[in-house]
Length: 621
Image (cartoon, rainbow, N blue to C red; front, side):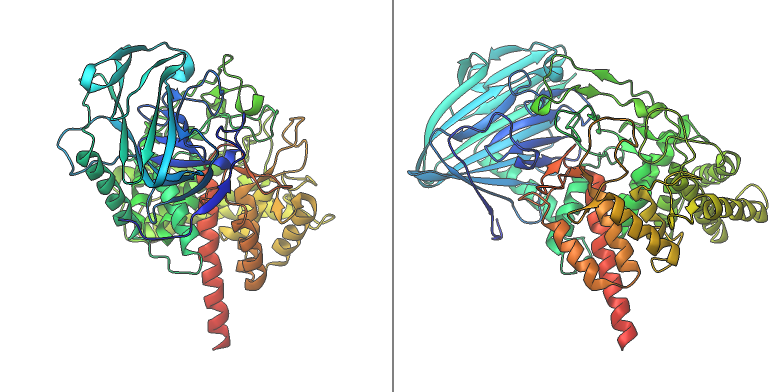
């Protein structure tokens, strides 16, 4: 079933995980409805059920003692090797001890075509002895609703164990004996070469519980899940030199796409800090329109235009409740009120408090989202998809909102809390909104409501403001705010999205100043220290560093772009995943994990470098 690829080898110093595993110690598995994070020590420390934005049953990532987890690991000292089965989201972890080796396969099963009836969700863990024998330890501590609810644990004879709370059931079936322990269930066994053990943790709400079979039937679900992921991965059209990392990023985006609606969440986690011990700890299990244009660009560039069309369809459906105004963030169902609350009973990742659920940014005004949605729509239409009449009318209405509101202050792409300001990049994206919507009108995809000259005049007015007030001649750069002197990395997107060419003198000088002020060790911070009003410094922002490389590629400096890209590729964790941010001293991931926007950046820059390389080749031929 597997195709061989070299696994990462990670030595441990004992048989127990550290008190606070690093964010990079985790890998993601999922079924495009929810996702789990599995540590290199074999512990599932994050899982929300039934969907991404629901309460967790395992949150050991945020509180080792009170969050809950599902651990499988050797009792003796071991060395870990792990990787994804190629072209899938199925994680393979090998534990090698002095007496033998076991392999653990972790997945959230995708059961299409396997059985006409299955559970709502299933976490399947398959343990196989591959050499000698290994003494294995198992522990399961279920803590529903972020540990705020108590579950009744019941033994159901041959049907295993059940945790029940309200109208929800979490059922465990295993061929390894488990018994009650101070925290949940525990068990131990010696696994010999050729032996297998299965753990099926299935979830149901509002319906009778369906208990999946073990043995050959569990193997069938594993095989089906691997086949499903490989079939999806086979559609990737990118054939460049960075295919492995690009495909891993594409699979990560698919893992974060809610299959029932097409929505793509920013990350599957909440409150992983942007600075250890700091308070920039946000819930990212929602859909930011800010990400839409670049995300659809990435999907289409890899051949996944259907996913891009689904994402656009979700956006235009979800925003009907607020149309013609756009909210900046929605949940996977399109709900608009994401009230923010703190979970005081959880200690937070490495004691970084507060732990938050919900996101108060939903009430902010962010004018750049109109440009992002227009970009997303133009990308989809340009690649052969059509808009239905309601979608076309909605997009046309956004042009009128931009014309009416572009001169207003907002909270900006980085959602800085406090008084609204006149962010230069927000004006740029208003320009982009009109540019793309005019293009859609010219191609007959939408019908703008006013004469076309009206929108062109407004677009020109926006550009004049950007050039006269958003560019500071004294510092030789576009600036974060109109009439300002500070910079932020979002300004690099002006070249990425076509407002200015990468070789434009103003873009080159802006790039240079951003590198001097925000760059460190080949990485970029998103803005200058203290700009957001927080005392603590944050790490480098992952996607910003990719934007800088895009500028190099678009000015034709392919070798410099390739060198910078190789450096950023080295900042992924051992299974190719990125968090929201990157520690500038160590290159380690930090912040919510894995982060869709960072992987979007990787895909877009890999494609941009390919295009720049081909352009250079055509120029020489």
